[in-house]
Length: 103
Image 1 (cartoon, helix red, strand yellow):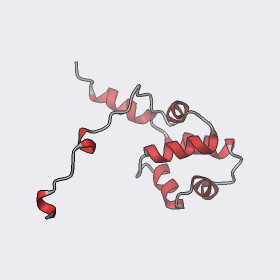
Image 2 (image 1 turned 180 degrees about the vertical axis):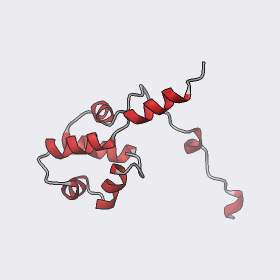
Image 3 (image 1 turned 90 degrees about the vertical axis):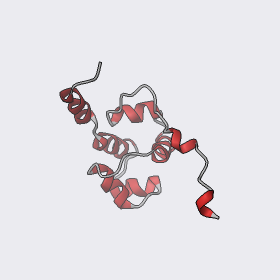
């Protein structure tokens, strides 16, 4: 059975990266997004793009958040509203590069 559009929209509404970022700032006793970007060792525009939903929280950033906060990956994902049981990795990531065009 395929989910209806209203259900998909309500799932999107649950996603809130701001909750994750704000929680990290509080937990790490940081002053603002600039301090968080320094703690995470990312450029300040990365935090801004995540806040404005122009950039997703990637796996490497999620791991870095875990490393500096000691909050589990599962809890970090829950803070931003990601309730998926598993991450799916595209099969394209495991295919070898096309070497015919590189020679």
